[in-house]
Length: 190
Image: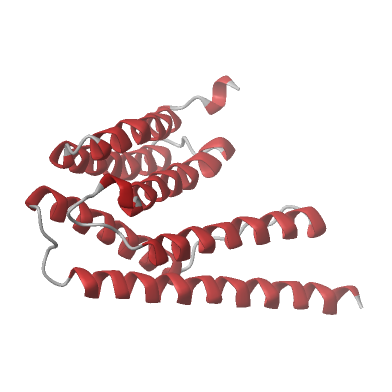
């Protein structure tokens, strides 16, 4: 376990520890500080990847924790910005939050199903998946900026629509890719 406790993994765990702070800052309307925490989390994400590659600190734990930390932060942001009871000036619509979370649940369940039925498999992220994450980060940054200003930034609806389109497209792409992989495995067994 000591070999898994690398500097890169420590940064990832620190990023995960920032999530409750981020949520509290939004709930208590410290949007500028929330934006700062979100940016620091993003920088730590880039930094832990750089450290892992540059100093040979890639580990199985890091490969598991890094995407989980990213998804937990995005999911927490989407959920907190969707709460109607917070009466925020700029919210993320519930339909987008449901789409984003449903996509992630679909991905996790299919990976789990394939790993349980076919053995350990690695599913590297696709360009579409990375663009989806980028668009979802854009939604959170736009919501943070809008709440800091007290009104939605220009093109906020376009950002929401684009993120929704990417979310649905990448979810369908992932599902089709998984079905193709399963069909190829069936053909090999026959």
